[in-house]
Amino acid sequence: MKFETDIHRIKKLALQKEDENWKFRCFLKGWCELSSEEIDALFRRFAKEVTREIDCTECANCCREMKPLLQSKDIEILSAHLGLSRTSFCEKYLVESEEEKGFHFKALPCPFLEDNLCTVYDSRPHDCRSYPHLQKKDRVFCMTEIFSNCSGCPIVYNVYELLKHELWDSDQMEEFLQFGYD
Ligand code: SF4
Ligand code: SF4
Image (cartoon, rainbow, N blue to C red; front, side, top):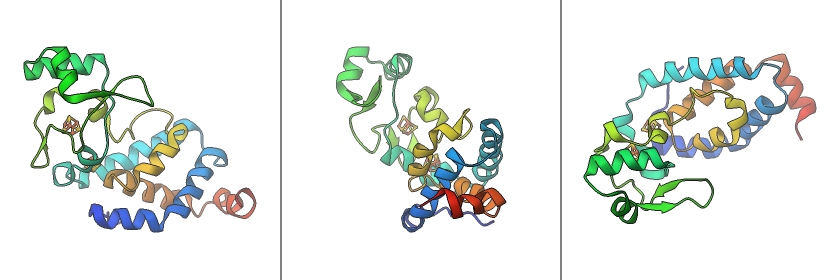
């Protein structure tokens, strides 16, 4: 399968496929008989395959559009890297998250993004290191997040396409479309 890498096209395609992608999310979450471990293994396999073909330095869309969650350890590492006190760093760059425990950068794109590159790469927050989080456990319980990342991350978009390609024609999927979804 040829991977789509153009973020503008991906945004359009993800919008066109929104209904289909939501159905597939519901199938994986509530109908598919694969275990959580088997679904994780598919995510890992496809993420490896897609990541090999995508150059994040050509994209950097997550650093432009998404706000990583910073925890205390991230703040300690990043403020030390920049030679700032924790307080100065927080005042200058961070705002407390309204949804989760932790902090976000105040501005988008990320203040440390320059020419599509992360200027604090070795000290970047843990959330940035693990994005787009496809290698983590229990992906089936994070399907809403994955579904919404389809339009913002070429890796997620293509992994989701591969997953659909792998499972869409299965008997279970057909049964789901006939009886499980209205
Ligand atoms: S992780 Fe996704 S959004 Fe971020 S740079 Fe790589 S492909 Fe782009
Ligand atoms: S810290 Fe680096 S990797 Fe994280 S959002 Fe900013 S530029 Fe991107």
